Image (cartoon, rainbow, N blue to C red; front, side, top):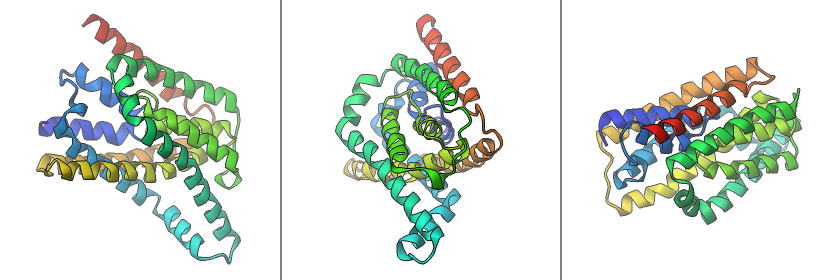
Length: 274
């Protein structure tokens, strides 16, 4: 992989991992359209994947450090209502993470083999757009805060996250959509989604690191650069998205739904006629 390709894939990771537009779907679709082949399945892509995930997880932790600090303090202190609320949210994050961990271990490789084609990813990207659109229609004017989320809603968000193992479906998109359907405001649903993303993405990094060591791969300058770029872009994406969801409460998913549908249709057209 060239340095240019590494930077492009890092920017793609930093944006699409957090925007509700499917990072895996774009990673499957974009390289063939650019004439780069299936670079995400090449053995030399693994170092880049590891450091890009690490960069994204670092950005998530830095942005939400106050939440994680509060979670840690709530586990050590039971003296205040705020500590109890923080501890409850932390436990809901843990609960919502469990389904994807279980399904990921059981089916991830099989799903990657079945759905790893660009045409299928483009189809599910279109489906992702429909999910985002209709989630706003179903949710209506939901405005609940994260303190009001119950275990059933958290579990529903966790189950929705499992479908993001299919390229084209967005992890953040499905979890935010499930959150607003469960009654949360878009801002609260996005916060919960991104808090869930931290252990998920960090866990993916931990799983891939032993493979990297086993293969004897080394982290070259381009790989390190991709991790730094992915982290910076991910942090900027978080800043934008949290401000966006704060200012646009109703039908906030509409622009992303239009983009996913259009990107999927255009990709299918290009692959069919070029």
